[in-house]
Image 1 (cartoon, rainbow, N blue to C red):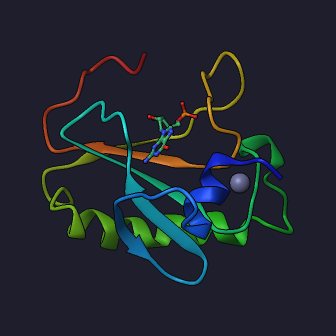
Image 2: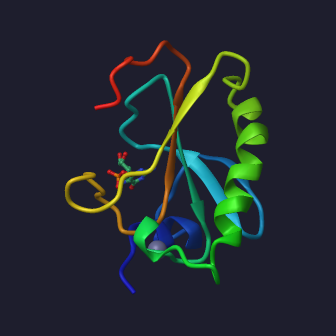
Image 3: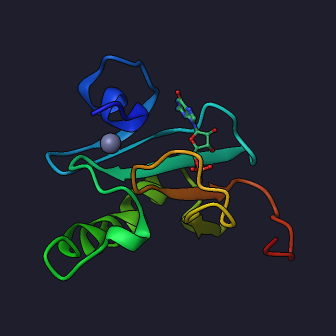
Length: 113
Ligand code: 5GP
Ligand code: ZN
């Protein structure tokens, strides 16, 4: 399967990792939209939010359970941050591998979009 984030997980495409374990990877976004911009992804390929099911939802819980630790590593846990996941065409999802953006390190726009 030709998937950019699967290639990042395999190491075929390099990335700046900030957290990794057996099931998830967090790495810096190549085109940061805030002074801290990290993507958290499951290592198992899931195309996006529409593909979350009761069978694979555990990994989503795992990602959210790790967000406090990852944001501590990024030093934004106290100052605050935003978690975003784009889905589909109108959501402007550009990579079809489920990912959660962590944005912070500065005061973000009060507008969500
Ligand atoms: P989406 O637009 O699907 O919500 O988010 C995809 C994100 O992946 C974008 O913010 C984009 O900058 C990031 N991205 C695209 N290609 C690469 C890459 O090769 N390496 C890294 N680290 N991020 C990438
Ligand atoms: Zn993938």
